[in-house]
Image 1: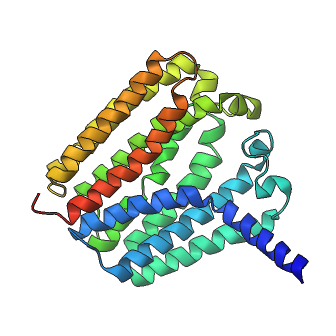
Image 2: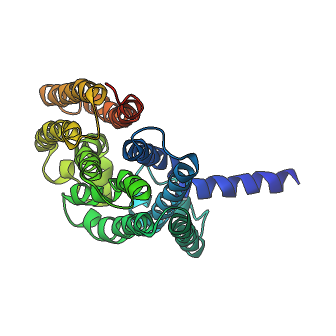
Length: 296
């Protein structure tokens, strides 16, 4: 009996790992920010639950399908060789059905309880992530994460669509923010893992262009990212709280990018990567706070 329980728990953990929950949480938080912004304050609790659960299920399903397609790469990388698909803990067929089922449920949930636009956008993000980024771009170009970042930028747009029934300029700006955040965030991580990516034959920017060229690209994208965040108040959807906070967070982001440029080799890459994670969460927290403080 005890062995069966331990086995069941292990299977559950493996399926959870397929969904990459840490990534899903950050994506869901950007969707939550989009819900507050679109609502001009606290959004409807039930609609919020639908968007967050549906979006998280779709993202988890997309990640499961990513695990299947990337299992040969994951096997050659120290960071990923213990993933369930590599260990054979989850079969390919089971993982395929798991990924498809999560997306089918998410699509139905969003269609019925939100609207068809939010459902179509969510499904489109999954298809783009799996077939465009994972299956094609990741293995062929240094711009893989630049173009592929579009999939991760969809959640706040889905949130806006769920609330308003359309896609407004604030949603486009939020998309741009996450889209432009992805390259400097991921390239900082890629600097730390460049040997892993080289061993796996993945043409990440540090592997193909080198460390210094990657640092330059991170700095350039950082400035463009910060500029994009300051566009949100111009749409009329965000106010002074967001503007001041975004400017401060952006200056710190650029500071870490400049620091990475000044320090030799890979020094500063981990700090830049960790701050980039905190940055996106704090930025969307500002959106939430600003939305419930419309007078500021």
